[in-house]
Each structure stands twice: as C-alpha cells, then as structure tokens.
Length: 153
Image 1 (cartoon, rainbow, N blue to C red):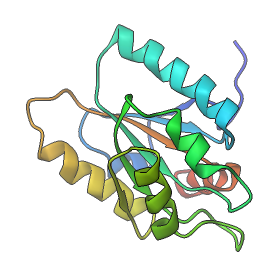
Image 2 (cartoon, rainbow, N blue to C red; image 1 turned 90 degrees about the horizontal axis):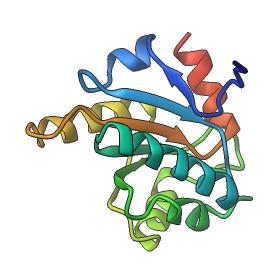
Image 3 (cartoon, rainbow, N blue to C red; image 1 turned 180 degrees about the vertical axis):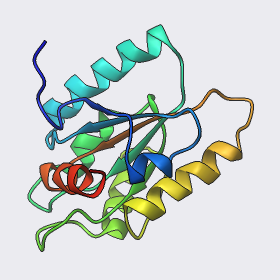
Image 4 (cartoon, helix red, strand yellow; image 1 turned 120 degrees about the vertical axis):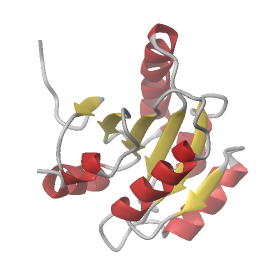
C-alpha cells in the first residue's frame, strides 16, 4: 500500500478531528484543479456507495485556481460547503470562495478558520440528527492541506 500525504488521506486523530461531529469520517485532499476534483468526487462517490453519509466540504483555494470549476465536481454529492481562507497571500478570501461555491450550485457558508469551519459542521450535523455521521472532505489547496497536517499533529 502506498501512502501519499494529503491525497485522499483519512484523518483519524488530532485536535481538529476532536472538533468534528461525533462519528464523522474526515478526509484530506490537496488537489486544486477541476481534474483532481473530478477524481476525488468519484472516489468519494465510491465510498458513498459502500456507506452512505452526508458529505460536507471544507474548502480553501488560491486565486490562481479555477475554484468554480473545482467545486462544480461536487455538485449533487456535497450537502454543504464551508469555505475558509487558505494560507498565503494568493488565497481567495472565505467570502469570495463562498460566492464561487454558490455560483457552482452548492449550499455554502464562509468561515473564519478551520476550527470555526469544523464547529459549523458540528452544528449542521446536530441540526440533522436522523442522518448518519457525516463524511467531511477538507480540500482545494496543498497549502490548506499542509496547514491541516501541521495543526492536527
């Protein structure tokens, strides 16, 4: 088995994971273009066939990337997107990325940071108690993925 950090990497412990809704699956992927998003959405859809869970995204992206094209790959699959500002000066602000998520046809909300994003998803999950625990995909940027790996160590 080959492990490639931040490429559909399952996160099972750490401070960020402790903030997640109880029983949630947390996945991390640093893919940042529409082709990567298509591959990741297919992989998530395969997981969905095995065990249905609502999919929530936490997404941060750089301004040099096709954010709307990336997010469109998750239309019909993601229940909700929480946008964050990825690390670095070249990142979309959470508000701008929220606008792109909405333009891609996704339900979305901006967030201050990863911790706030996870708390939003915790509240979203509590508001839907009859659903199974969510599957959360943190995605959109290698910079964001790196921050997650450092902050969650």
